[in-house]
Length: 159
Image (cartoon, rainbow, N blue to C red; front, side):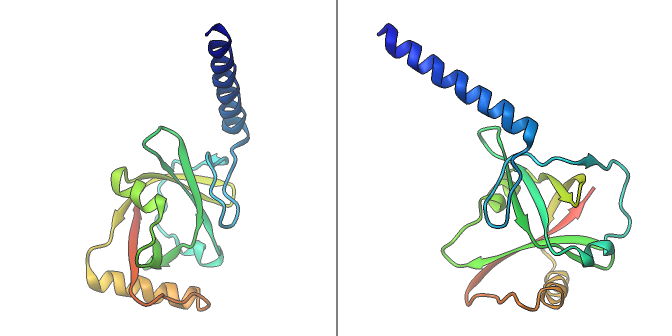
């Protein structure tokens, strides 16, 4: 029994050490592989015009999971009327972890280049606004196709 306790304690210590190393290094997402913490310079001033993101192909978005670890992903971003939006479009029957986490806790960290922005995501419920943002998305990302019977979430970045 003592040996099992020592093994479990050693495993726990290794896990804690790994999390500390990942916290320091960040372990950011890469392409379709999710990551943990995002690293960069925190921007605390308000952004009044997000149109600079028109030249940014993708951003990183970090949410907090139920088990208190961050979950970060690489996603597309859309600037519409100077405001920033993110959209999640995927086939029916699939899911996106970050969507579920945002619905539970809308506070996110966004990384654009080396800049970090702590913001809140608000689901877009106005059909006209949602349609306009999705048109802007189609213009910015003409290569992206919307699957038949797709689930589409559009979030407005505020704060």
